Length: 175
Image 1 (tube, helix red, strand yellow):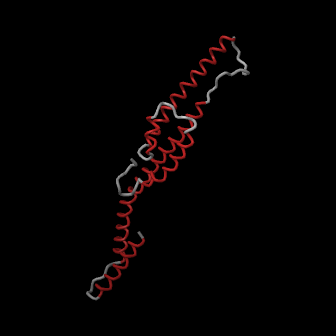
Image 2 (image 1 turned 30 degrees about the horizontal axis):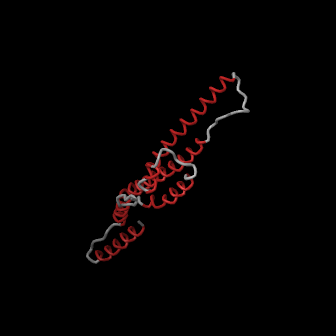
Image 3 (image 1 turned 45 degrees about the vertical axis):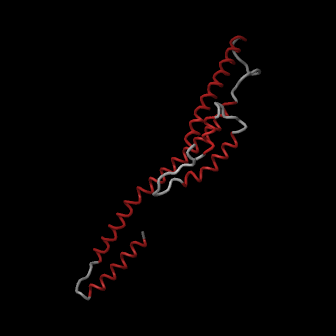
């Protein structure tokens, strides 16, 4: 923008020297107003463009963060409380057995629900991470031994995914 203002000032100064011989001069206030208007127009045009680009990049980052976080959440939910011998329970033996059964059932249900949410998050990054399509469709479980590799692949794809959000180009997704 400074270059534009410098060019406008230079051309205005050249115009003043050329027109001075013809008896016409530009007032300094007019030159300043023209420069201010030009800068305002450029800023008014470019500001929303850059803001939109930043928002698109932030949205891509959020998708990646959600996918990575959901993979870790699934693995944490895999290890639910079961067989709590040694932990005191105020009820009878039958009540304790029922409590442990319900706790295990809730743990399994939570694990299944979180696995579904993780698969949904993986589907959101699938346009950027080609392997994610296979992870979403290759069975219901996200295996614990595969999870670190999945996180690494997703994290490596993040930079390329963010670069797809160009200033004036349409999006192109990985196949």
